[in-house]
Image (cartoon, rainbow, N blue to C red; front, side, top):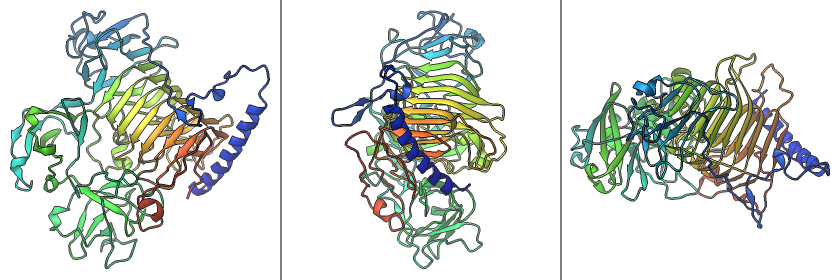
Length: 605
């Protein structure tokens, strides 16, 4: 079964699903109370003019019979941990925990003090019990502000001047040595404003057009060669030619990370190393999106930029570069306005996964803030080499799990909020509820809940995904820097048996807003007769800012899929101006906003 056939089939099923949902609603027994069934509830507030408004349920502090308190700044691991006046510094799942904290296990409610930043990462190796989950939460009566878990360390001990001859204007650059290797850096202003510092790049692009976020990138002009399907002389790499900008010596480009759009479908920029430089043709040689040259052609007017070379560290509006040596290295930084970093608050990313597990059940994570996560060093990595290390998240489960709740949390300036995947053949993930969270400014996406099977799997070798509910979440500006095998979707539920996605409000998304695949991969030998997908009362606007070939709300594979009372508007489909996507990539979005809740799903391209 081809992907295209499957997508067309799903579109038909989606239409049938909408009709069926209308018929079921009309035929509801008169004795059924309004809102008795989940699919009858709006989950978002329906305004008089037909718009949908995010309406999360408020956070309520809940605790079990046994409570432990954690204060990263004022606690000690040798304390009892049983009272607010005797807290631990570390959670027992933290590899840095010692003493009584490290010795603790079992079913407890772990309360993180508000107003305190917890720095570290937790490895979850245990589970709660049915009706008595392990809780990670905060108590509004203990501390003020947020209970934050941060994947970063504060960078200090700055020395003025770059000690490398290949860094321009070295006296405007500062350096410090770190025992870890950050791929992301932020500066926090005295007013609390967070500014992300870009990895050194050329050109020095900014998002000056909100409808065309790549308007300041360079583009391949392909002068002197064919408009597309060009390869290096040995036929092993794609060749992109830009006679207007690629005028520097070969060393200026060799080994840089290249972010380039590609042709025909999807088009989302992918990161790849420059492996060859053709100074005569003013071209660069690099792999295809999934490794092979030409697996997606590079066509004239596809846009690109280069990053991660010390020669690019010259932007007075701020950049950084990291010289990796072993597990750590030297951080070179130039702050906006050439501010002295000794007087600034600099956060450098250290941990990629903040709560990580190979298997956990009956766990509830509520009322916490997650910030400043790292990503795998190999930005250009491929899943068949680096594996799941590329797919990071604040809360990550790679294995089996049941009765898992993530609610009323804030995720910002992170790679991905939540990722769960049933990897092993005997793994199952079931009863997942992700609700009332706020997610913004992510590199890889929002919520990715996945069955373990890869494309082409006929006889099952991986785990299964059963029931998933994603309710009343808000997501903003997600999927800005995806991996080569991950397009940065905001909400992605893959091959679940039963799904409900409702009441979510999403805006300014670099890829798909909501994509749900039902029951099984194309060509799989198993049957899933009880699958059901409900997607309703969601609002998705300004999606596909750096992508095409999809919809703001997308359904795939098996059904029935009931898609109704949603708003999906202004899907930009911004990719490769001058190619087949020219009308969308030139800066004008395709307006599709609705004046009332309605169904809106992709029909493909």
